[in-house]
Image 1 (cartoon, rainbow, N blue to C red):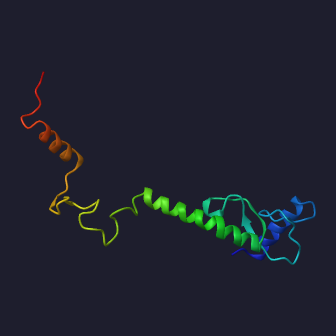
Image 2: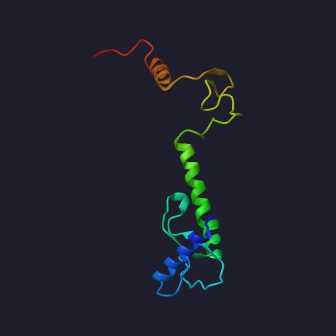
Length: 137
């Protein structure tokens, strides 16, 4: 929440930049004294590190937040959680048994077997291809 002094400073800066007029930094139309306005960060939202502050119609600011800022911030938060390993497949409390992060695996026939790491799968495949071992030629 911004204080009255902060709002006054924002209004005066916008008034000076507009040569006696205050313009909405989102839609570009004039904001008249007595109109509802908010402190707005445009074009970079505050949640993404935007520091440019201006006067924006309350309606324009709310619409910008609903259509642009909130979905982008949610996506950034979701991607951050995914890349840092906070969320992902098999990390929930009710992960499927035999799932990707489980130490057991189910075969096509339904048999439960211990999950092998990649090198174990590779060794098993090589043993199946060359049961007597590779010939050295």
